[in-house]
Image (tube, rainbow, N blue to C red):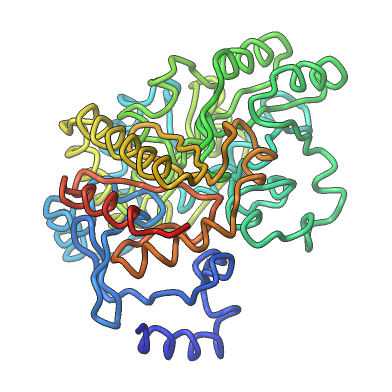
Length: 423
């Protein structure tokens, strides 16, 4: 099995660090070699070995419509025929920006960038400029890209690989990064009491997706909003994962909390490299060339990503989010029943089209509790599911992603494959 993938992985190691261009893809934490993918369609991917898998990674989230969607493909092919990069404005930038502003409650103006990391770095720079302060408060296990200030106690691949601290980042850079446990409002209050006058921003995944899926407890997001209002700090929602997935308007629309700044990525480019940061007009006016906060990118707003994003949002706007959520909820209930019957302790968290199987008897509300889950059992589950035709995230600290392209049969087979897992 996987002969061609293993051959390509060996070749890749000769030219690419670790053989991959993003660390978690190496599958080291789950005791496997990576699959090299030849194609993807709908809810499936096909490897270079000729095997097709039901895909619950969905390119780490952006393929909410599934792979190879005809409306997105048509728009993308038409854009390619008009040229792949201009280095100048195009009309599609305006159309996509308008769609984002109309959908996301906290965004009155938006700047397109090329990645989620770029978006969070830029949002933090803007928050510091608007407040005249230096410190940023983030939460343990929340991942905001690989910008230097955010790598203190980060989730996602940093947690998966157990990388200690932040090698390559000077201590002076993270000296202004304050840390609190996710969902611990008392700890945040204590930090604000001690250093509130120096805090430029609180950045948070409103629904954590990089320590596995961890939901905000009642009052947590509301409390962050109140603390920021009282101190003059800005509240930044990192919705790179949850934007247009937690709901069409993101987690902020779902929970009714309006941040000052929002970062987006993944879905708004229909699977192409893209990101965005936006927020209240009074803050976004500070961004150059309208204001004095510099941010730039040669490929920002490139015509391919804009066309794919417009098509994606146009389809999502008319999609039945409630139906997909109900189907995922049913899947998770059935998985819980299977694990209970096998006396395998699990906690399954879910929201909208996302879910995580934590091999833990206890609820997971923060990074410390996520790390107590049995990662070795998850590794065995990953390998078992892959052998049974399912592609899951190769890390216990990631989130499974369903799409509108997944069928009821896909979900039924997921349950059936789990029934064959021996623990």
